[in-house]
Amino acid sequence: MSDPAKLLVVDDDQMMLDYTVRVLTSLGHSAVTATDAEAAVRWLEQDQHIRAAIIDLRLGKTSNGAQLALQALAIRPDLRVLLTSGDPGSLQVAGQDMPLDVELLPKPYRRRDLVARLSRLL
Image (cartoon, rainbow, N blue to C red; front, top):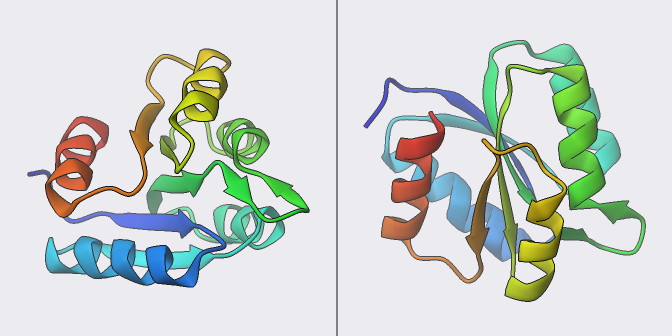
């Protein structure tokens, strides 16, 4: 596993948000959270220590995770991104419009699946 990193976790599902943060902190990473794109962008603009973002594809009715991922990369080209979704088909379609180094992870995911993606991401 890589050195401890600070990650941004963006999900409108509080249970998934809490689970992901628990896994990250158990691995020695730190995490900040957002439940929508606006809050996520604020984090990225304010905190240059964030190395990666885990972004849910569907963020309620007002936010789109794929658009947020592209916006995040425009703000911080060095950012590593992991897109997640409970809809594998939508995740694959969204992944086609992403840079090649953006990782995809279908939900629900297990700890070992998240750990495997993080090892490639960080």
